[in-house]
Image 1 (tube, rainbow, N blue to C red):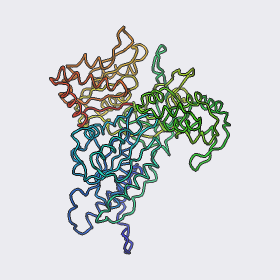
Image 2 (cartoon, helix red, strand yellow):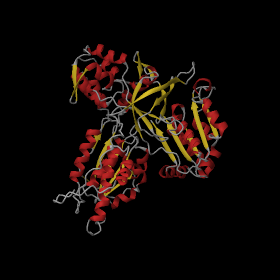
Image 3 (spheres, rainbow, N blue to C red):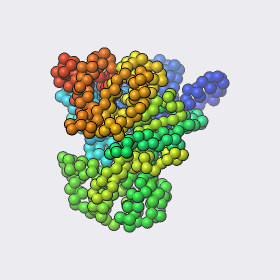
Length: 594
């Protein structure tokens, strides 16, 4: 409603139109509703406002996002919606779809970007990041910018991609609207404050669109997220590795009945874990703390034991905790480690230690509140969905490998994997919510071929891919590369794959079992073995998908694909790399790595 007084209009929709609007909005979350509100405001302004001069060239406010799990994309969409509502002409673009050379024509840009793994850009930001850090990047003295960096302080190169972009833009002559803001896994409050500051710093639009009331949410379509998860009943929790396997991998089926959650192949499911009870007891014993002591988390009072159970991160070590414990334990050794400029030793330390190891190696006396304040909030763990929705309505399936290993004289376990594998059974409820992954999707063309490369639990999304393509009647051929340690004990979903082969849902399958012969064989070796056919499929339009370990497997598979294009595609190494980059840009080479 405009600021000037005017008669209150009667409700402008008839019953049928109102029902259509409600149906269209059903299931949208708050960010999506906000975007729709801004979009509708723009349409209303366009149709009712008097004709105005065309916008001055370069006056558009551009928001670029690079997001691995969807968090950055959600922040960007919410910011774009609010900026549109305030009258700005907004362009919202994934970094994957943005031409880097266009930066020299921009006037104001906000960058929202995550850091993946050991300081790497997310898949959709890779090309822009490379361009900016190269000698090809132009001077950008006419550009104003700011950066929101998302990261995880359990990695030493925390928020590195955002830092790279912020530093490089300044070197190229661009002017900061404000300092970079770095967000840890509990990012929402920092992101909200950054978004509000950004809108306050933007040059005000010359012509404000009229305010409109927000479209109201539909009450019978709940939105499930970190703060309000869905409680999914466990239907099946079955071990799918053999007795002699060195890995404990489970197939977990959860009920989504009544949730309204609808997922696509490639999406992930976030699970809110409960920490291992034995680990909680270890902390209380080591620190001589009483679990019934009341502490504060934000504005809420809670017992220490309950906070360690399901509110605070007590497994994954982070830089946040290390910095806090260096002061609590007055440890010069930890301080020196944190000051490691090369970050090699620091990276190894964080990778090899859990929180309990630091507490035991650097003992200190600490009160319950101070200890709780040193810990990050316990975050959800995301698992690639291993089922097709149409083939399994009202269900979602996960493939979960238990994290267990010996170190520093004690057993270590993963928070979520030990919870799902060891401590939930049929009939229990697990708190979950959907994590869409728009950068890992089946081809839109049902006739397109797919090459799926997924060793170990990396095969999970490809189970969903094949189920979905079979259910939809897609005619495109599917080729699976699967790897594990041993054929007899680690061939995940073996009977299902053979059934899909027999039924024509899967045309080819090549496997690599690394420990079944004297010399180890991996999926990248099988790719090279079948290089001629792989090259031909790619030349004929196949989409390539890789899922699994980011540290070694994904890089080794990339090298194998490059070698195949060199040997069988008639390219040199530089041309082959350029070809793979073009496949990434066009969405025909997608990765879901962790």
